[in-house]
Length: 420
Image 1: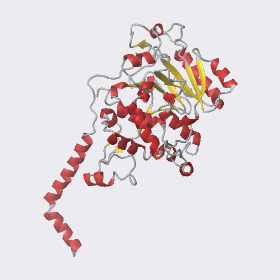
Image 2: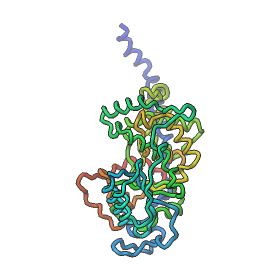
Image 3: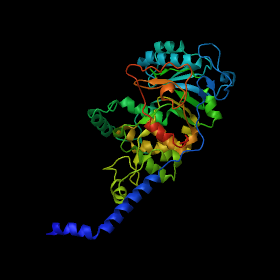
Image 4: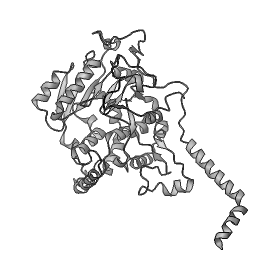
């Protein structure tokens, strides 16, 4: 009998139902629009070169096949270094990466290298790399406190508890999460998130270029990236942007959000570009979605992290950024939460969240003109450069097993610096 009354009720209240439906969709539309990042009227992050013409001296055409140096080579060097974290077993891949960077760039600039290892480098590694570099080379070990389990400063106990964290690693590994069961991988992510900039061999420098074993540079670089970063007021540079695997860090975004609330950090347009606004109706969005036990990587308002981040195996950035009180406070919050071990928090999303949190969008630089391969992904300016052109690139033809990076994250992260 009650079921028969339902259609009658709906008919008698059709106007009210239509009004509620309209207001619900209107509220959702306005909510989504509130996260829209406006395009600027002019480019705020143009490339440092177009083809072989440096932006700082467009009348000069650099010839990558000659021994002539780019115009920037005549300028004073920046206080900068190239850093590589490697094991002795990585010697062949390290030689490959250094040889590639020297060929495409550093043979003209002779910047120094700092090679770091959690164990002492052997003679073969040192000899092999010393033969490849054109600048000074430092081979150093990482202090134990930078590559070990964090400890509570008051009690001296490991935090998180090692046995608890190792069980979490085993569970992640059983689910097929790459590197989750490798304790050294967790140490590495923590080191690159909160300690590398304080390593004794890096304290004298202001800028760094992160170089990984086995990577390859496929275009000549006709300028000094360190100098151009400084002149343009840039702080952090990247070449690839892609999605993080959400299951590796389910509590990272919420921890970052809580830190922002505790320290009254706004974030601005850079942070807004990381948000995927929820399209759920207000009651669900406000009451259900913020529950981290059900929906992870959400703001208190129910909106989600879009998981976009800068791939940190290539970075050119200011070390002062990481040495700032703001960044140190942020890392301390993350370290105390324990997610570097109970989950698989990576340094790439940590750096990306911090850059979006503390920097203006125009202080970030996309090296669109650099050709770069980190297997299995590649960036080729002539293909994925969105209008940028590389210098003497050898990457346009698809390589077996290599693929370009989808543009979705790049479009989101660069909306605030590219005209619509």
